[in-house]
Image 1 (cartoon, rainbow, N blue to C red):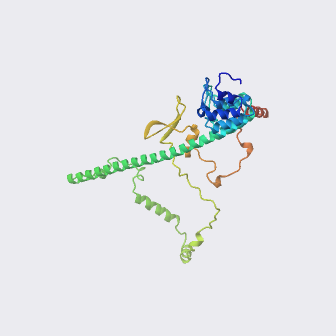
Image 2 (cartoon, helix red, strand yellow):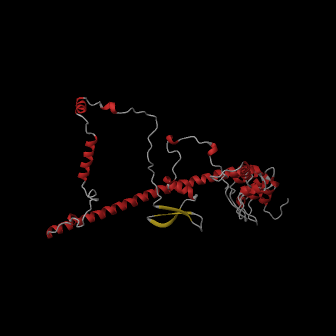
Image 3 (cartoon, helix red, strand yellow):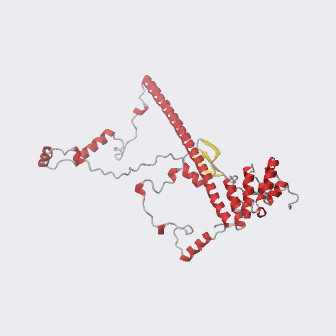
Length: 365
């Protein structure tokens, strides 16, 4: 048997000897995750073209007997890296179903998808790209749940902070009222007039007399204007008005049409733009936030800043369709193209070039 220098189980996995793998695994149970000089486990040795046609069978047997699906070599490669580089689609599917990390990176920062692209294994690349998209969406949904929980906590903190401000302002108002009462009591004992009873010693011009008039005078003025506006023009019209009976109240009400749509209401979601600031740290590249009541930076969920801002500041990003009344069709010709700058028309040849640049971009399959 070739493969001198390898442990017996490693050599059996390298050449796909299923019976030998089963025998060695049963006799030495701890050897299923044993390592050789390069840090390779038996599950790594199976990911080779030399183990065909028993590659998938040996892999399933090792996984059923406790093999670590995400174990790495000294170079940081997982079994999924090796399966992708060898173009083993069946093994790739088995590893992903067993819980292999499709986002794992080796020591050079390459993912299994990168290795499948490098070695031109298109079927494996398509499958891994779909798995990576699903994994990234699951991760994004988990992070979004954390953002929603953070938003609820910040809203509660903001409400408590506003309540404390109201209590503080109420306390100050009560103190000022108590001071005014004490000042009035002192002025009454001394026989002094109150400060608010002092009349201004400056002469008021005729242009400011209306500003100093009382509310009663302004209300009387509006009442007089209303009387002049509705004053009858003649004695006959006055008699006709007094003799006629007022119309019933129901006749004055317009018809009400129910269209099945609720009336529009202003958004009631709290907005934190005035009390929370979000940014991305330059050194760690992690999003952080601070609040007006606590200036200490705190770590935010690992999401793009625009996603965090849309959750934390909902009123800054209003929806295009707030209610069924806002729904309206849009002409597809007026939709902004991906590669076309806004406000500038392009020739058909430019459109073709931009399309080819997107389709033929390296890594697109």
